[in-house]
Image 1: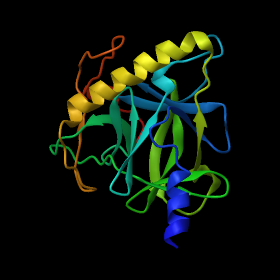
Image 2 (image 1 turned 180 degrees about the horizontal axis):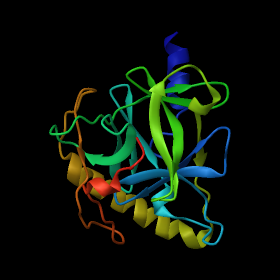
Image 3 (image 1 turned 30 degrees about the vertical axis):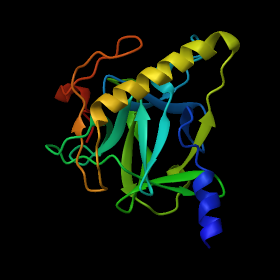
Length: 209
């Protein structure tokens, strides 16, 4: 049983850049912009490496953090949506998930709820990512796709990922988090490779309840 558990854990691509896409619709992927997280279609006009669409998984005491541009992705229960956050306890947000391997892909779970694609948000031109009670539906299954790079993009990707790690380390510090820690929605900051703007402006959260 321990050997089987080890195999399951190793199957999840920890530390590697991936695109997170719904199993039933490979045209969509997680996209991160100024603390706003949406499912968006890949922009065919701008192919290649785009940091806002790249996620990295981190394993912490049997749970997983999902990070994009060096910021964790948290569930905000007040709006029931996934948002960008840092780790403080002023807000009722949680950044750690269970990731379960299935025959078709992966379930991303938290407190008995599963990550699913929500309704379309015309303001940010993407689908909100919600949590709902798990019922083994197809909409609960996700894939982690390797980020494909050509030779010209490899250096850019390496610099971007290293910069994301530095930003993540800046906000995380020497943390000792637990599954009940409550991270804070990211505030406006400028760090690392390129310019990344983050906001706590409530208009950045969805208007769709």
